[in-house]
Length: 65
Image (cartoon, rainbow, N blue to C red; front, side, top):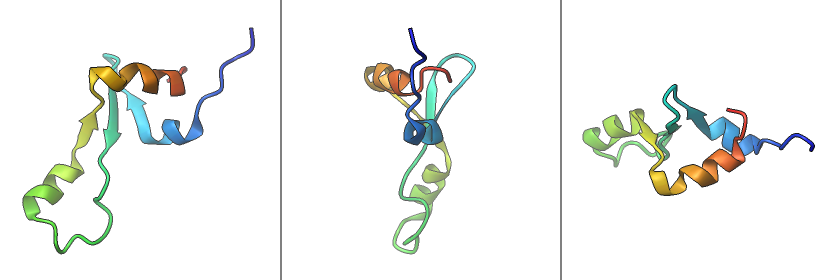
């Protein structure tokens, strides 16, 4: 059986924690920040956790992470 290929786009966007959760960095934090509130910009700095329903799909894209 050949090795599975990792989806390189997904590998750059997601990482797996020690407990197996998949985390990602939030979008919309790079430009046009003047119209966004301070609270919203502060929240965008934090990483998000993929919910259970999408975890299987992302794990298939990054099998060896």
